[in-house]
Amino acid sequence: MPTASSSITWSHDFDAALTHAREHTRGILLDFTAAPM
Amino acid sequence: MYSDPRVARFISGQLEPVRIHVREQKDEYQRLSERYNAQWTPTILVLDSDGEERHRIEGFLPVDDFLSQIALGLAKSAFQRKDYADAERRHRAIVDTFPSTDAAAEALYWAGVSKYKGTGDANALKATGDAFRERYQDTTWAKKASVWQ
Image (cartoon, rainbow over all chains, first blue to last red; front, top):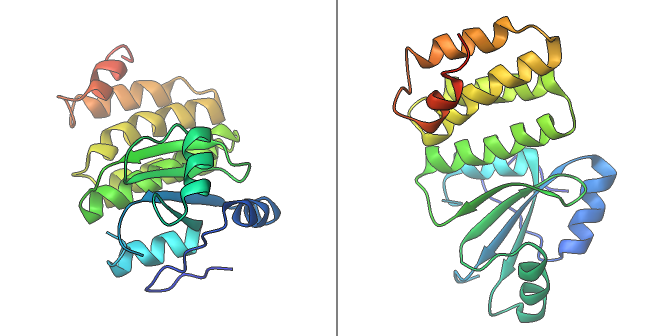
């Protein structure tokens, strides 16, 4: 689970993140990007 | 935007961050961009815990503008789940923390609506109309609040 830190730990698995969000009643930031990963 | 420590802390503390790459995750991008009608990058969505879109940012923004837009998404999520006290608190925090951003006027409007919805007190709307006569006069939100006198 991401914690408040000075860098973002991105998930690239939307369905897993949605399941986690539902379990913990948290929102999701979904970023569609073309930037280098 | 994401390299700024304030952005990283805010997002990591409040949301599940998910990044889908247009080329490196072609199938997933296709599926999710159709689901959420995303046709440009960057498109950044604030979703609630059921995956429903509550706010959309298209294109890059300076840090304060970006943070205020993310915060607006969280405030809208609170409003949508009818937690009007939390919605008011979150909207007012945007006005207080990011007063010079485009999000501030929208947040001031919805802070008033949230208070009214939570309390039934029509004075909340009048006070919001009064506030818009002091600031953000040139915004659409001020026009919308102009009927509250």
